[in-house]
Amino acid sequence: MESVKAQSYDVHIDELAQAALNQHIAKNDYSKTFVLVDTNTKKYCLPAFEKKFEEPIDSIFEIEPGEENKNIQTCLQVWEQLSNFDGDRKSLLINLGGGVLTDLGGFVASTFKRGIDFINIPTTLLSMVDASIGGKTGVDLGSLKNQIGVINQPQMVLIFPEFLKTLDPRQIKSGYAEMLKHGLIKDKEYWDDLRRENIFEVASSIQKSIAIKNDVVMQDPTEKGLRKILNFGHTLGHAIESYCLENYDKKTLLHGEAIAIGMIMEGFLSHKLTGLSKLCLNEIKETFLQHFEKVDFDTNDMDAILKLLKYDKKNSHGNINFVLLQSIGVALTDIKVPENLFEEAFSYYK
Ligand code: NAD
Ligand code: ZN
Image (tube, rainbow, N blue to C red; front, side):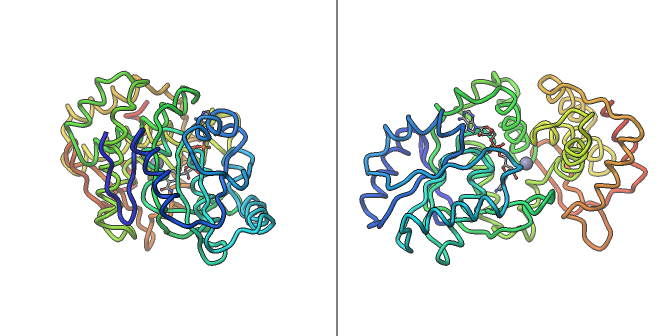
């Protein structure tokens, strides 16, 4: 597979990734090399990584997995370890893990001694096709997601699809939802191909998804315009995700599971407002329902979710802005949606 040229760094896949990593280390005179893992990636990914990596590792830092640990306390632990192990400005941090770890590790590296080099090695499908690409790093503030952070690019991103073998099938599907999104917003042919593929054999499509996300990010790194299209399904999806997290009697949804619902509902809004055909809308709904179990929202749920919508970060001046589709492969940004359509969108999903 070819590498993808990103902003100031490259994304390498498989054998090329291994060669690129070893060349990079040989070329740069790093004083220390540190690897950040969580309990799961230490067990499932670190042994294979150590076989690929030729240079000595100075120390391995381990953090607890999970979104609940994506916070400043965990950063503090890693900063302290970097300091205790004599990390200096010429140190390198290799982030080996899912999106929680690459977001946090990227932020830790970007702020330690005003910034040291870091390399992302994403180990979940979601982090391979989404979280580790684009330079957004950061942590949560209490229950508010990604409130503290910086945009800073890694030295390189290395993709080893073999890591997906130990990943929970629900996590695979979560990443698959983001891949389908890439087709919906930018590439109809890719959407058609992905829909036909076996969900557990999508490794060969990772590169396409990365190229789409990267292309969008390169044109608009700071999300002034085009980059917003990556938020398709995320306006309602985020509200649904937060609601389910706070209401333990409801099923807790992974990010991709929530945005799959968001994409069905925002597909409906696209049909009403921006010209998406009925045929395409039905195709979107069928595709997601084939892979994601339906969640049973009642009127109370809907009211609470719509309340949360108002707190969505994309709202400006009291309006709720959506990314909607004109057709499959063509997304439009900053579309205002009349509130009465939200209820209809829920009914359509049900
Ligand atoms: P995650 O990092 O929590 O990983 C999911 C679980 O899988 C964890 O328990 C992890 O320890 C485990 N795991 C990781 N790799 C494994 C492997 N190969 N085998 C077995 N288990 C493994 O979740 P995620 O879905 O990768 O990432 C979600 C995070 O990504 C969120 O915090 C989200 O905000 C962030 N994100 C960031 C961006 C961005 O642009 N920076 C974009 C999308 C999402
Ligand atoms: Zn997402």
